Image (cartoon, one colour):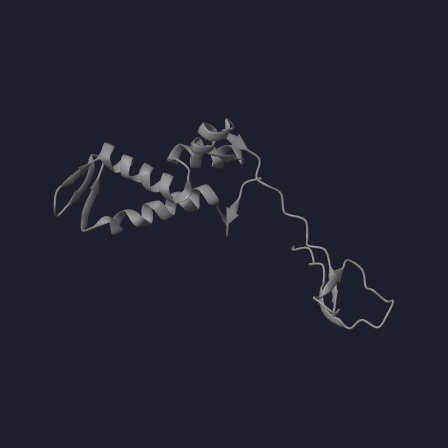
Length: 136
């Protein structure tokens, strides 16, 4: 399953965000096929890609190729994770199970909580956390 942000795949959204930040680097006059020309000098194409690679790695813990691989495979691909754990692409984690409902009653010391309503005795119900409804 491909992660989506709105109607755009997450990897494409990340690349668009990086591309949108590029002009914020300072006084960009023109982007050409050979690099970026600014008022202070010219940034060559290899330096530009290195800067984008570093921005991507620091901001998302993925290289630009990792974003492309994630988008193509629909799995979570990461070079830093492959270096640490040995797995380059892994499945996206599933949704966590909903928290159980809890009933809390006032007692002498501190509140006592149960997974089911405690109907014996005359303890006073001081809190109830219902199980969350599934998100659609």
